[in-house]
Image (cartoon, rainbow over all chains, first blue to last red; front, side, top):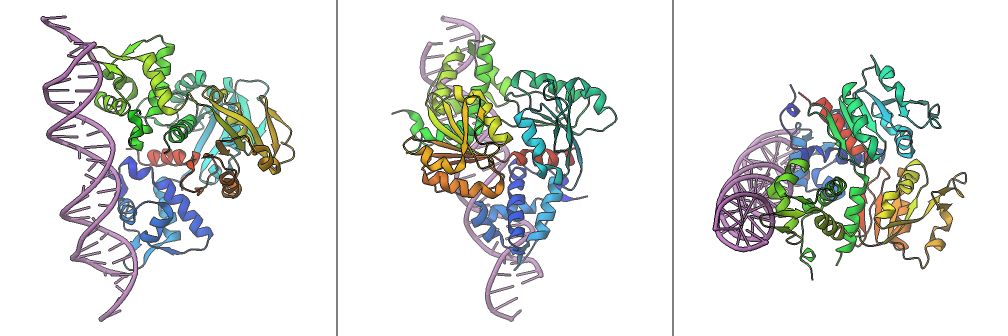
Length: 211
Length: 211
DNA sequence: TAGATTGTTAATCGATTAACAATC
DNA sequence: TAGATTGTTAATCGATTAACAATC
């Protein structure tokens, strides 16, 4: 039983993707070894925090040496669950849905996008890469027996909660919501609301309050 | 000189868009008055935190009554700088750039998208709503004298830092980056890196570590 | 071995929550 | 006025940072 079963704070978890990203870059630069101090200057967290974060999941380093970049990358990939496979569908095949479907990196990380669903008949029948755009009315029948794990909501604000309700009943295990609404689902469903505008509004705030 | 000139922690600032969103919903439901306690149940922060947050910017409530929804919405809009106007350009007119250009709500909040820039000749010349897609080579000449404040990076990972460097030299005041890379800009430039994959990876982590 | 750097405990800092006097 | 709810101070909690013994 691994250490990560015990509670790790969300503050730590939300830093993991950044470690993952940076380690990938280091690998691409053929860096094989790194200390928490070097990581610190690159990533902007303190060396102490980095060591604390990593030690929530195990002792991946070696005293006097640091961390093996490739090994640490693999560990963080595993911790994040990026070595698993997730059947995924996207609801809404507008620009945003298409952008996500086109982002082949997700496929590489195990998020297998099986289909997009759309109500606009002009989009139904398209292929994004090799992913079909199906009529949203087929959603229930299509998903039957397919063990869909993640549903991505790329509809407008008005449809988001309705779509979420349908996804919950399929059932999916997680919802990734891009509609600008705070949708509500049972606690048993993993939910990430992504509000693109939030960070734009923060930009606006910071511009206004710059000295 | 308003209270908000003094330092407010980023933790508070990052909650403001959520208040803004919720108050908008309340207005649409014709709710005119709300207490921190009622807000608490809707938004999921404690009533105490809500009062603390709002008091960073001023006393908007009234003892024994609560907050006036419309007034509070206006105050938060003002605090976030959504009553100002920002000249904005988007670099990269792929699906994501188009999605953002199509999202007319940003326009309503004062983010005026003047043009998209794209290197793919098949996209140059398009119009998104009434926004022109121009050749990226025209970026410098187009922006001259136009006081562009915000640059949105919707390119691929490889071009992101180069584009950022160009934007910094225009200069823009802020960069909203959607490319999956941690770009680096001088401290004087407001920067928000949006990593769509981060929240997907968190979903993956939570799915894996559900009990 | 000596030097370096981790893993981990203890100290500090900041953010959240609780409590309550002020007051509408 | 009495009831309600804010604004604000004090207490608590959790996260970050510092320090250092362990050890490669």
